[in-house]
Length: 450
Ligand code: GLN
Image 1 (cartoon, helix red, strand yellow):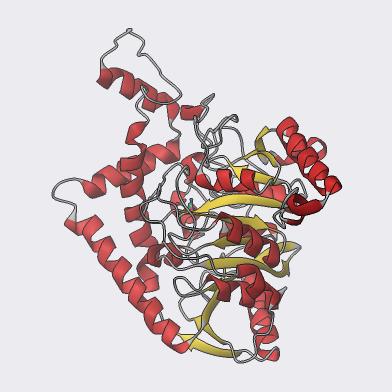
Image 2 (image 1 turned 90 degrees about the horizontal axis):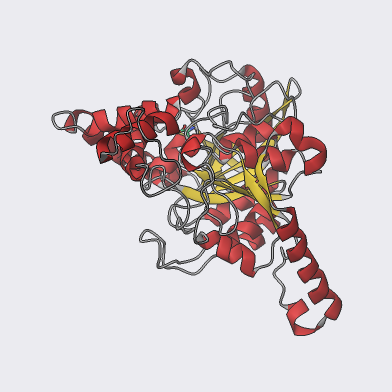
């Protein structure tokens, strides 16, 4: 299928067919032999998976969608990859993304944009457009993404797939190239809620290699996804995440979803989260600040690309300058400049400090909302997939697409996007959010909409 369609979609940056087939043959042999080993196979053993190219893999290149890491091979596997290999899921390859996961359309990849399988003149969302498009185009039944401000959920919404951002700390970040460490989470991209729950269960769990990893047993997410009974479940409609700025087709599908949930016995209440109006502003200060620091390691010495200035100068400053000028794309440079500016002496309190305060207010809004509701609901994205190129020269318009997904990252709460029907032939996503550690609730609510 990849050979057939990926020339048009460009979901994959690297395909590891031989490795995948070898794992599949191994699972086949175990099943044929029967006995304990066959009995003990993971339920997803033999089910192929595609990996966002921000997650490091031994023996396969990892580029982060950047020229900076062209040809770079990680000497180790991310923790999620170790778990996937142990459960014997064939790894199909690495999927395209906005450079260093900065973007909402996958147009900021140094390796060309990914196209939306529903309409190849449109974007597949971002930054994880490659993973979502691979699943939507039936190139892979499962994929992994990373979500710092919506990069799993928004691509899920615009490609009609399911995407989960787990509770912060629930899945190890070890081996996910850091974008904004206090916001990043790895999570599943799938076609069904149950698949997402199964994959989440597989990749979750405590990891001493990630200092923010939660040291708690992994709940039974798949069991929650099998329970589609929402009778009595209190679902909170977030006042701030609907209405102005949302396409009417998106709102129509959203209201139909509410109706469906109400008919299934859920109690729909409205919740007020006034600080959400400032979430986008806070995010686009915190995220670039952390990224500007995380990306300092790409200095032309330690990883990947090294560019020597034209005059042959080999001082560290000149090599670093030439490498970063040539290796990073425009959006990455924009964020580094934004971040270093926000963190600079004299501006710290006005920008970064204020953004952190807003972050606390958003957490409090969530706390208050979860007193009235068990889960919250909103459209995942304000629009359906937009045409390629439409927002490429307008960073602010691009950032606005993340308005509904960002609050969850700022508060660390789990979120899922599930398909909620079509508007003018294009998928609309519905988002559910739950309190920290209550990821099971988003699977239960998400499954009820399927
Ligand atoms: N679109 C958001 C951004 O550009 C989210 C990115 C992400 O989640 N990795 O920052």
